[in-house]
Amino acid sequence: MMVHSILVPMLAGFAVFMLGMKMMELALHRSAGKHLDHILKRSTATPIHGMVVGTATTAVLQSSTAVTVMSIGLVNAGLLTFPRTLGIVLGTNIGTCLTTELIGLNISSFALPMLELSLCVWVITVLIGETGLLPALPSRRRSAVRLGAAGGSPSLQAGSWLLPVRNAAVIVGGFSLLLVGMKMMQSVSPAVQASGLFSLFLTKAESSVLWGLAAGIVLTAAVHSSAAVIAIIMGFAAAGVMPVPIGIAVVIGANIGTCVTAVLASLGGTKSGQYVAWAHVALNVGGAVLFAPLVGQLHDMMQWLTDSPAAQIAHAQTIFNIAGSLLALPLCYLPALQRLTPR
Image (cartoon, rainbow, N blue to C red; front, side, top):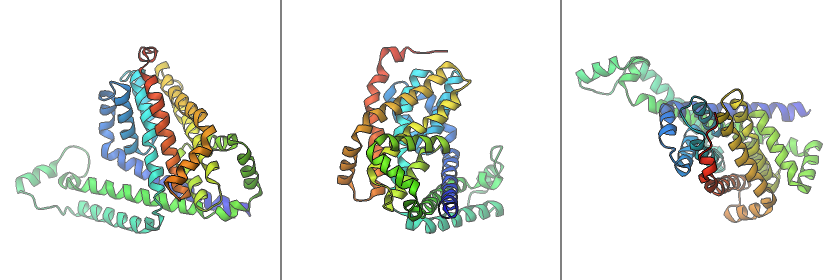
């Protein structure tokens, strides 16, 4: 019974959610990814510059793990030093809040219209590219653009507006799927609420915040996506299945669980690359230790900001991540850390 009522819909919703996430990530990376390596190398002279770049880059890629792993790769290749990555690591935690804040806007009713619109736009750009229908251009310019640079179809080279429009359609479509997946996962809420195991978890979590932290760590380490775990928790909170304070505890734990991928990516690399991963761990564990005792106060603050349980959890993650990064920023200027360049 639990398999059909909880597991199957949850896995299907999770698959749709992750498909949307990957579509957004790939389209955003295709739009701006070619510039990111250069930006990370050239714009991280100080920790505060690195934090700004890390925030913007993570917001663009929609993945803090992707930016952290990219930074580890640059450090392993000797293109970036460990001290220059400290600010980037702080920024990744801030930039990753964009996805959950967008989900918290409660615009799931627009998911299907957005998906249909994005699909129509994508099909139109494909048809224009295949048929060679181009905007009116002077004949000399048209022939030059048709030849284009190597790689990519001539029609895409000719219509310079086609690729950005197509990427935008994929981004909107990915976000729509993300909302659809979240709604599918939220549909299991009544069955979850009736589950004895879930009731036991809630009872334990109400008596100790450590249960919520542990759940966030384990779930995020298993699926390698804190955004997915937080989206599930936001759905449960919106349906009234999970109290918001427990959801906030799970979110804090999810920030620790997301470090697992970076640590795994650093294995076998240089010591500097491993230091980047462990700096990420130190930031998130330190933030969790600092904020875990304040879950109740954080919930009270979120209630003052909004009445929506899902938005409360999204805002709590944003405040937790911004506060943690700002508190850690002065430490990045310590001479001992700035001189630390292990090989």
